[in-house]
Amino acid sequence: MKNILVTGGAGFIGSNLIKTLKKEDYNITSIDSYIAGKVDNHIKGVDYIRLNTKDFNKTNQLFYSKFDVVFHLGEYSRIVSSFDDINEVWLSNSLGTFNIVEYCRKNNVKLIYAGSSTKFADEGVNHSPYSFTKSKSADLIKNYGKWYNLEYSICYFYNVFGEGYDSSPVNGYESVISIFEKQYKKHEPLTICGDGKQSRSFTYVGDIVEGLIKSWKYPKNVEFQLNNPNIYTILEIANMFSNNITFIPKRKGDRMTSNTTNSNSRELLNWKTTKNVDEWIKELKN
Image 1 (cartoon, one colour):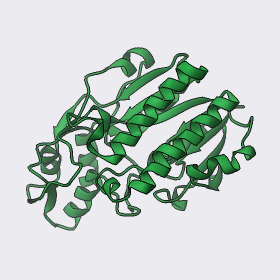
Image 2: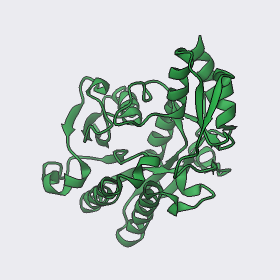
Image 3: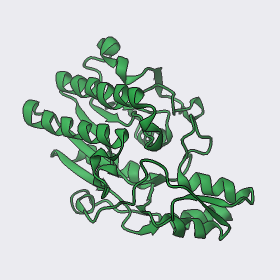
């Protein structure tokens, strides 16, 4: 039976991943700092450990030779606030990820890393501390593959939505879909930062989970784009809820695009998307 470690296992994507993995009766351990993760996301039969990855090298002797694969999802994940939280960003996305990568190297464990699609924005990887650190962590993992024969897959996410997503946001972070949903249900104006022409791909969490698992079982080191090919502007998304819209100033770190035409996940993994964001919004409104 496979033994699996999921960092960020009490978060939105991590809990959905664990829920799917448990159907195969894997032995699963989650480590989570609970900065964004929630105890409410715990799943029966999983071993949950409260631990920040920045401290992983101090305690990882507990995990030696235990796991067959590590899904590393537990990093700082907010763009706008990363300018003010740069110390926390570095500790989580740089030091913490280094600790996880080193564990995988020393123990010959395959690493599945949740990369950020912000590196493909027109503004480049240097437009925010979040984007910069996530991009450098991906580079580190790829170099470990060259230097030490680390087995890895890097999966880039694109505005994930679905069951359990930020419905009770922690530390101020909330997805745009969740924000619009709450404003719509309260009959409040939907707030858009800037002119609303920012374009995005929105990907269903169930599809993300399938891509993560398929990338684990793929035999080569590859970067996979887990993106829904349908692109919408933020204004189009808002209009799916309501035409009661108000515009507020653009925030530092906001980017105009974060899309890709890369389809290697479909070609190599036989991966496909099953739900579009407009279908999800219709379900929310009913």
